Image (cartoon, rainbow, N blue to C red; front, side):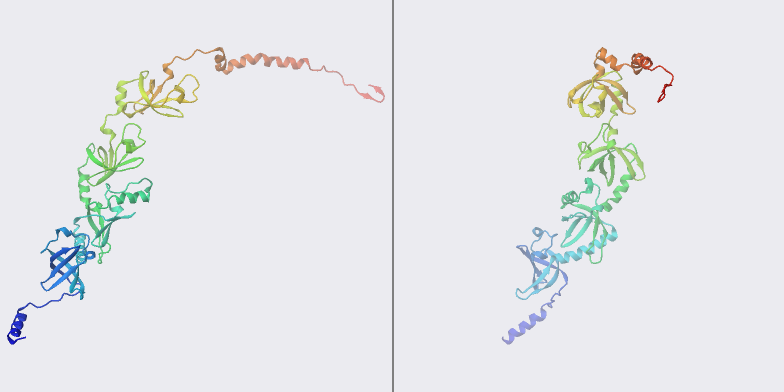
Length: 412
């Protein structure tokens, strides 16, 4: 190299910035050069080229949003002498930043949004750049809590799997220094809403609630973080043997607040409708004839489906004047029949009906009269035979005589 060239090189070298070789574990902010095949090439301080391979990108980065010139924060993992590249990790830099942020959220009680990526029987798991954190089932709000008859674990898991990918509003309620046990709570995130909603409710209010679960004797409904129950007896004025016929999970229903005791709420759906017993009492009275379909038949009678879901009973003894061995020989389910009202008490919610009261009783035959005669009459008919018995016994009784003995000496 010529002297002039050497001098020029030394001058340029002296003017060049110092080369700062990154250390393993450093987290730095550098510029994207190119995104290709799920790999990211990074300009490292205009001195090196870094590579983020696909497994080190993580699951929170939108590659489509990364363009040449975008700044990204990465962690230095080492270098590749063969490729002449620095090996970088976007995922691990994000993990450290997320743990730091979640620790702040825990302290500040800030509300955040997460999306579960997996589910098991007791948790929803949130995978954020390779770290798995949890939403326990017990920390789900009523609308998401798995209401499963008999607590069937397979059905619970099926329900939780249906929540994977859904956005949840949560608060951090537990965090450790290593960031490996962070717990989110959906219930805690709505606690303030719940408190305010409870303060605004009063007895007599009509509110639109969302059905969050259905069991044999209950509908679970939720409103602004509040969840309570509508007992089967308050779903409808008629007999309710299957609450799922009246509402579906996720459906909005109107309920009436009929009681408030601290945070205990009593709700009713049926009281938003007029009492059908009062309606029926205005239309009918005892001895009126009513026509309705047979809804079901039991061993002791048949039920008619009256207005407003009321069930009227035709007792077995009121089916026919004759002996009834099988009610289905007289009427069938679905058949419209006319019956006479023989008992009606709207207060105790009882209405008794009769078919035989509409038919004249058959005339009694002599044999029927004898069979139905009182026991005293039968005794009077048999009385003469009983009085004759002593006379017959007297006729065969032997006369009394003196005792006769026989001995060897002859007759004494």
